[in-house]
Each structure stands twice: as C-alpha cells, then as structure tokens.
Image 1: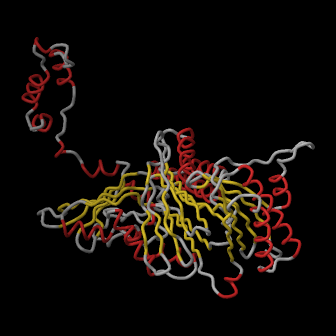
Image 2: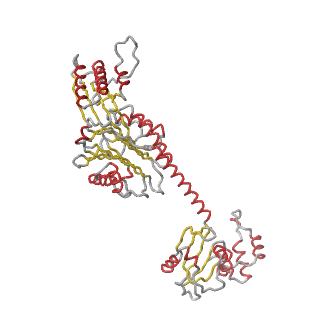
Length: 549
C-alpha cells in the first residue's frame, strides 16, 4: 500500500508517529540520501497532512491541466465536462449543462466513430496529431470510464496532449525530404539522355519512372551510343543507393561509359574500366550494369553484365530467350574479371534491358518477376514505345511504386519491299597479292553503281575502298575481307584482317612514300574508326552520309 495514502487516513498522533517511523534512518544506512531522524520529525510535525490520491479534488486538477480534457457519456456522446484548456482551444464551454449533446468539434475532428469504438470495445484508442481551430495540433486519447455513481453508465474520457512542436518538426522534415527528392529527381532526369540516339538499323524506346513520393530516388540509368560503322552500344545500370548521391554517381558512370564506348572496346573490357572508376568515385557504393553492342552485319547482340538482370530477347518467331550468362560481380567491387557473351538479334527480333524495379517485389522471388516479364514480352507487339509501356503496365508499376524503374526496348526490324532496298550488303573475300587492290576497286565500283549512288559519292566510295584495302594489304595479315553496307542514311565501307594492330592517322612527310591512306580516308569521309575483332584481328571502317539522309 502507498504510504502517503495509508497515513492520510490515520489520526494526527498516529500519523506523525508513522511519519517518524518512515523517515527515521538507521545508523547503518546513513549517507544513502535519507533524511535524518530529527529532521524528519521536525518536518512531519510542522508540515500539513498529505492528502491521499482518492481525496484529491479531481475536477479542480483537471480544470488547470494544460491538456484538453472532456468527458462524454452514453451512445449520444453527451458532454458532461470540459476543462479550461478545452474551452480555450475551441472557444466553447457547456454552461453547467451536463446533459448536452456532443460538441460539434468532436464530429469535425472525426472522433465520434472513435468514441463509438471505445464504448463497444471498452478499450482505449488514440488518434495522432489532429489540428484544432486554434491552429495547435493534439494527440487525442479516448479512454472508457464509468460515469454514473452506481458505476453502470458508460462514458469516454477524452484527453488531448499538445504535440504542435512535434507535428511542426515532422512537417519540416517531410518538406525537407520532399525538396531533396525533387532535387534528386531533377538531377536524375537531367543526367539521363534527353533524346535517344537513333541508329540506322534499330528502333529504340526507353522509359524512366522514379519511385513514389515516399521513396527516395535511386540511380537507374540507360543510354544509347552510336559507335559508327553501323554498330550501336546499349547501356542500362542501377547504382545501389538513393538520393542525390546515387544520382550523382550515376551521372559520372554514364559519362564514363560514353567515353569508353568511343574506344570501341569489347563489352567486358568496358566493364573492367568502369569497375575501376566506380571504386575511385565511391569505394562504399556499387552499381550493376549491362553493356551491349549490336552489329547488324553479324545479327547478334554481344554483351557483358556486371551483376545485372538478364537481357530478354524475343526472336522473329515470338520465342523469348533469357541471356543471363555470363554475369560478373557489380561495379565497384574491384579485382574481378568480366566476360562477354552473345545472343542472336536478327531482323524481326526485340530485346529488353531493365532494372530491378520492374521485376522485384516484396515477398516474391526475383526469378518469378523475370518469368512474368518474359510472358508479357511474348505477347507484346507494336512499336518499341508501345512495348515499353505495356511491359511497365503489366508489371503493375504505378505512380506510388516503391522503386525506380528504367526500361530500354530495341527492335531490329525485318525490312521488306522498298524499305528493304534501302538496306543492302555486299562482301568480298580478299586473297592478297598484287591483284587484290584492283579487284577490290572494281567490286566497289560495281556495287555502288548497282545501288544507284550519285557519281561523286561513287567516286569517293571507290577511293576510300582503295585506301582501306591498301592499308590492310601493307600492314595486315590474312584473312582479309571487304564489306560494303548501305542504310537509308549512309554508306559504310569496312575492311577486316587478321592483325590486331590498330592504324592511326599521322602526318606524312613530303618524301614519304606511304602513310597517307588513313589521312585521305579521314579527309573525304564523314567518319572513320577501327576496332579489334574477336579472334585477334581488326576492322577499319569509314562512312559517308547519303543525300537527304
């Protein structure tokens, strides 16, 4: 039993004696913070008697507490009592009428259903942070009580605590987070390509959707890079993190990918360079990425994956293939070797690159999400943009999605009829020897004539063919091959051989008998380049823009 409550019920003499007993300190407990016996006796003799809790004037206390207090009873919620703080907050007070109907502010605050629930369940309920007319915010706790003297009536005590400071701090935090998210979204979108490059042989569409308003923006990105010679690089990646930092890291990686792509390296070598850069940017942040290159002459997509999700390819027959091998570790882990793989992507095929926000769901295996995407791709037809939108809808991605989503869809159209006439190929195997250059010139002249090129473009094409072949004959090794390709926008001339030494443009001295071939090609063509090919060889190419292309 509480000592104060027990002692308050004793006569004065016994109460003082009890007080002395309670506060007297034994010799072995001195120094532990207790009041000395003499001092305790003096205090208890002079102090007024302490009232027990059950003797306190409850209404007077409730009138003075800063919290809002109201007492209602019955299913009609008739108001029996409100305190001064309640009156100050709402500007009303029942003038001594205990049988008044429920105050309208309780209904405006949406508390009446809560009061009903408390009466039915006989359990307290709490509603957090409701704003009252004074502009202050309160947390309302409703507790069931007996309101009749016989204890048979059912009522509810409403006790509201001022949480304005906490509510305002939470609102400031939400505002700050919202602004940070808007900044991250703006940065993210500004770092993504504003317009996709348009390769001659592919039709491409992409979409990016940030996570919902409660989710921080991630570092998803995609890109399309035309490499020249008819080849196209495609990139998609996901920085493991959220907010402005993830978006900034993504921007650096995307810029680096474009720079490395210009070197025309195999996909796995590009990822090796990116891996080292990611470690330098932030040793604590990693990213997944797929880098792929499409060559229309080969009809294949050569790719390398750094811990990213598998590419999905639907062939011309409608069958979907999953290109998930080989897959190396994410970027930023360091010290690992990546490898390149390939998957057919001929005319009539469609490929999809995506980030995990499209297929990953809580309480669901990731492989199930990928399988669901495969089924959606198998039934999706139309333009790349239509397919892109359908895949996003089929995955259930809404405005409040909890993760970023990036999707890149590419098609290699099967061209027929007049459109097919604009895309032509011709190739010649070069056996070497003194007759190789004249034979190559004659072949190029015949092909360009059959393609009905203007005379000036015909002559430039023959000259470029002659110089590229001569360069290969002098510096390369067999096997050698000449390939001419036309699209609706350009003429591409390419010579391959078995030597991996890449040519470079240099200034020839007046007395030099060689060294001018690449310089001539670079002067007359709209672009030129070289790359190493699988098996230890190289390819040197140049291209010319077609009139109206």
